[in-house]
Amino acid sequence: MVYIVNNMKILIIQTRPGIGDLCVFLPALHEIATHESNIEADLLTKERTCAKETLGHDPHIKNIFYLEDHNNSNLTLLRLIKKKFYEEVFILHYGIRYPIICRLAGIKNIFSYGWFKKNENIVEKSRQACSKWLHNKELQFPYKIYRPAVPAHKNNIVLGIGGSGPTKKWAVENFIELINEINKIKKYNFLLAGGKIEHDVASEIIQKIPDTVINSLCHENINEAIDLIEGSKIYIGNDTGFMHLSAGLGVPSFGLFGDTPTNYSDYTNRIYPIIPSGMTSVGHGSMAMNKISVEHVMIKIKEII
Image 1 (tube, rainbow, N blue to C red):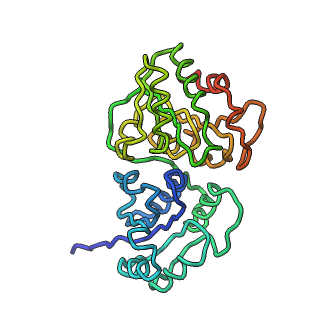
Image 2: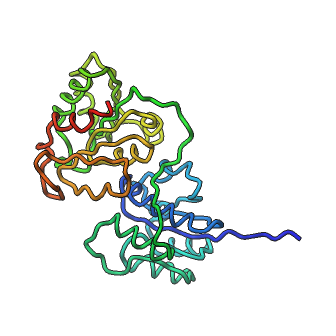
């Protein structure tokens, strides 16, 4: 007699926007999706996370749904969740909306942070919640972005020139000086990682250092950018989505933190925060990106380059 074992279908909801947000929560997603052997896990998130591109090869996430594709409508989401017959839902944030929708969809096992938001470390909160929900205090929370194997590009250095706001970006003059200082040690190829709004910055850097191979990723889609970043020697740059992507791809990532707290990088040991010399901590409103010197960065990365 053949016994058919049905997979347990679960839904994970993570609605913080941005690629970096997806990466920060990815260890928790993987722990939830693998805590039993017969799990089939789906993810509901926002389009700005680029989850479909980033997690396109992830063996632990079966389907990815964007809120925007369902008009972010309560009724549409209710129909979607009800149709999928999920047995469990894990909500990685505070709020009342999604627990109510899931309850109306007939789901009995709903795990969430609670209704009222608290000011806390988002990395530590995700770990505490998963340990509680999964009844396991020994979770490892490994961080990995799954991709097909590609040849190493150890002559490439990724420079993260993008950022979510001007106070979180290192000055273009610093990146130019950094390239020149690195060139004194060894000639590398440089990849300028940013969004479309950094196109002019990338062009300026390329024009001012004509004797070095420098390519801009500012107009590449995420899949193409990931293919180019994977296997690189090192990432150096702003605290941005590309820093988190690089770390997930196994690239040692040196993040410049002058206006964001370094605990956003606590979820992985592949991100090495660089804060201004003489400062013991930074956070929102520190306005200290201009206090991070090229000399200080060179000291931090010298063992790798």
